[in-house]
Image (cartoon, rainbow, N blue to C red; front, side, top):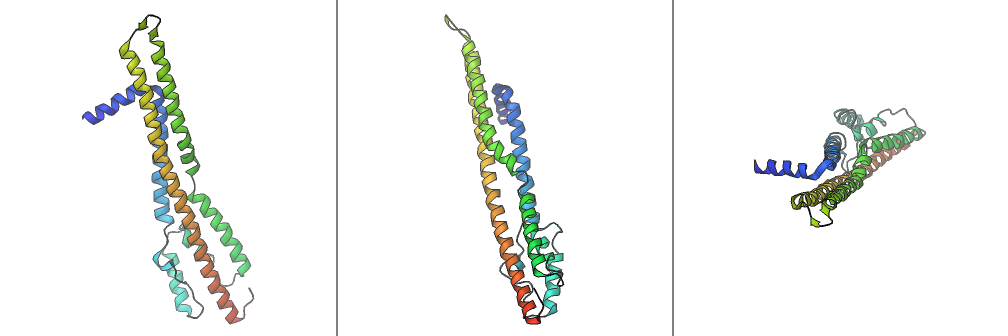
Length: 217
């Protein structure tokens, strides 16, 4: 009970700056949870795709059927499923497949990075809003100091508290958003590297299979 009362008092003393800071905190939390779900649901590398060739040319059609079944078992929007399905059509030429893989990889990167620009903006905006709260609080304190000395000590202390609370909340929001942004940016970079290795392995298998069968690339 005392914790909630303390938070309520902090919000009251923080002044109007607390409200836009609260909006930024909610937005940062929403983006963080959304990207966590998207990367967990559609960006995890399947175990069978980690260093494993999907359709080696030295094996038969059963392996290709197994590969197709594995790909179809993934969600439709899964990054590895979208890349793997491009090689499902054995009649398509390699130059067409390569161009489509590049386009699909760019689209995947854009989708996985959606909302991160706002998270990066919050990293900068939250401390600035906290600084604005500091300025407003200090101005409020200075107004209570008259020519004859201290007019309202409790009002001055309240203004200083407003300044400190707004700055502290802004810094906390910025720190959390910064850690989340760096984590997701690194996670997306790793995903794109994994997709590149995965696509190169598939293309190598396809070239080997076409070379053995004498089919043109």
